[in-house]
Structures are given as structure tokens and as C-alpha cells.
Length: 304
Image (cartoon, rainbow, N blue to C red; front, side):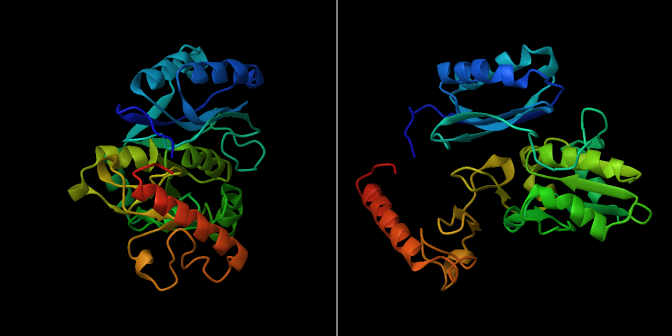
């Protein structure tokens, strides 16, 4: 990882659904503004809005948020913050997309129809209702690291698989009350728009996602179990948005918990139980050499 100054790095997860017909014209000035303020990470622009996670020093993140909020269409954009002792991202990317989160169903538009937002403080009461079907809209490797009690795991590999899963496993005539959640709120917000279009009567989603819940709800009152997977070097975070104990498997990219690291199939930096039998020996050899270089760098007190 690349070193930064002794100042704490702010990691900001943000998204906002808004009609942005000129999103292509926004790409260059947004990239220039980020570069001028030392921002790294990825931002996605589409006609339906903006999405991304970025990192920077306090002044830089504040400058980016001010720039975004100056656009009246993004004035209501909210973000979630956590902190790190170094940049979790190596570079900046500002990409143009068809969707800021890819569901792949034409006509689904959270700018026109969306479910009921539920504040983190009210979430426990909702999901404790036995009449509510609770669905985790994240992918299988994310769910494996942690989820809410009673949550249904669709075991999807991509968000594109979610509509088919719902159509095959649920019926709006039987499951009338549905609650959904995801990491930062974007997937479940779009999923709620889809569910309304499918005829579900009452659709709820966690405002601010798991990140906001872990920030706002005290551990002793929490219905969350495990860690929340995040797409950077921290791998997983816990209550108070503290960095968890999970690591990333370089062989397959799946999160690896402390218990997983005790299994005979685990080899640090090379493979885990999910991929030990499928990663080629050629790839394992490359990863072992990479791990050797990392170990040497650690012994020298250097970052890698």
C-alpha cells in the first residue's frame, strides 16, 4: 500500500440516485477536482446518478463533497465515513456506466419509485417482526463474512442474479412485507424499486446500509453478526466502523476469517478453503513469491 502523511485518511462511501442526462460531461471536471485534492478510489457516473468509494485527507474529502453538493441534483447526497491509517486505494478512477449499480432490469428507476427508508435506530424493531421477510441483497462472499439475524441469503454471485432469485423464490401474494439491506444502501434501494415493480405491497430498506447501522447502533443492542465486507484493504469492519480481523485471499479474492486461517487448506497469501483445490500450481507459485516479497518488506518496516 502507498504511504500517506501521519494524518488520518478518511474513507467516504457515497451514492445518490438523480437524473443526470449530462453525466458524460461531468466526468472530466470531476476527475480534475479529485486529482487536485488528492482523492483516490472509484467514482461511477450514469444517467441514473453517482456511486463510489474514495479516500483522502479531511480537507480533500470535504472539498469533493462541497463540489458535488453544489450541483442542485446532488444536493441531498449523503455519505458514510470510516477511517484508515493509509490510503486503501492506489489510484483514482472516474468511470461512465449504464447503471451505477447493475441490476440489468429495464425500467427500474429509484428516482421514480423506491421503498420506505428505515433509520438504523428503527431497523431492529422492523426485522424482529415475524411477518417481515428479511433479504440480504449482497453477493455470497460478502454474506459469508457477516449478516443480520434471520436474513435470507440469496447466494448470488452478482447483483444481476437478484431479480431471477426473487421471481423464483418469492410471491408478492404471500410475502407482502419485505425488508432489504446492503453495505451502503445503494443495492437495496434499487432492489426496493424492483420489488415494488413486481407487486410487493410493503417494501423497506435500511437507510445508509450496514455501514450506517454499525456506526449508529451499539454492539449490545445489535442484531448484526460477524463483520461487514468492504471493498478495500480493511476487508471487514465491525461496530463503530472499526477494522475487523478478516483478511483477503489472494487466490480467489474471498474474505478469510481468523477461524478460516486455522484450516489446513489455508496458505497465507496463496489460497483458502474456497480455492485451494482450484487455483493452479502456476498461480500458487506466483503468489508464494509475492508473499515472500511482502514478508521481506514487513521485516524492513516498509509497506508493500
